[in-house]
Length: 420
RNA sequence: GGGGGAAUGUCCCGAGCGGCAAAGGGGGCGGACUGUAAAUCCGCUGGCUUAGCCUUCGCAGGUUCGAGUCCUGCUUCCCCCA
Image (cartoon, rainbow, N blue to C red):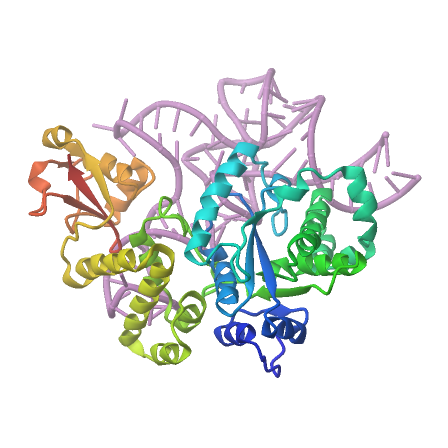
């Protein structure tokens, strides 16, 4: 982003200081709107999974700050656009989701917003919308006549995302063009119906958003604005929140609070400051203090990051419980009974169960084959003792004084086995 | 419409004289070292009831003791000519 701009509004001040801004179509324009309390911004969320993951968290936080600084946030469910599918950045087209799946996903995704936004009828109350509201009733011919005539294919061809595909001889399907048009139309429709004047999103959405601004101008809407956040990667270049174990989901039924806390606790040193700004509400001077910590001391900052970020999502109580579980597990080496737990029938345990199967059941390894391999590499432990023999059995003798068996993969992943 | 190429381990990229569970990367997981970090080094990276068995190289057939590899047809993608 341009550097010498000095925002007047609280909104842009916060976003600038905390590093949320990658590109903006008109900083002065957005600033003026924000200052006059006249800023209504939306962000679209695809309904492709039952839960959003940390990749969407930057966007959610932007909506949060907008509301805190006097603007009106509008999370938009892509109930309509998900039926088409956004092919940007994909090398093969996404498989089509059934309407039932999309509905179910929508319900799952919605939950999370109430934790970050206040909904209601007031001026700065958040508004939850779904583009199925206007997209599903769209008539193709009408759409082409009223909206389609405003799209300049010439202009769309010159967009980076499109140009890149063409230059690389990569497939660019017709559906992708349509997705762009629908998203642009969303912006205009939101402007008409709800007075939305700003669309935010990840940096990969820039082209789509600007197309919307252009369409708004052609269709006689008041000036619309675009603001994107940087694409989040870790300091070592990996995509945020993607691990082999799975995405870092926001919904508790997809990822336990403890694992969510652990995700933040394991932040790389170089990311701590950035993440504190983006994913906590801590004041800036506190963040400056924390990110200045050196060496092992930075672990204190990581714990604060983890607890703060987890508290935003799951509440302070659960966040602190997760922090305490981690403290017992890692700092005391004790068995914290609050670790993720699976049940086993007491009779079954009495009879003895094979160690391979039980690690699979605990979800620590994907197959007995992987369990075997991990045992060879010294990666599986029972009550903190590495398993030497893959044919070993567990029985009541393995119960700790807490009445559980602690199963571990590596040094960080633990599951308790509890007889019932 | 004609001609030429491509599809490989269900994360990706990619080698593969008829003997192949299939080279090599990346990514991931584990071990060592650390600070639950990074970097580095080492191991692993189809499934199972594991001295063995089963399933994998776009799809369907065929040749062969034996096919990722050869033949035929099909599908999809790319390039060149029209």
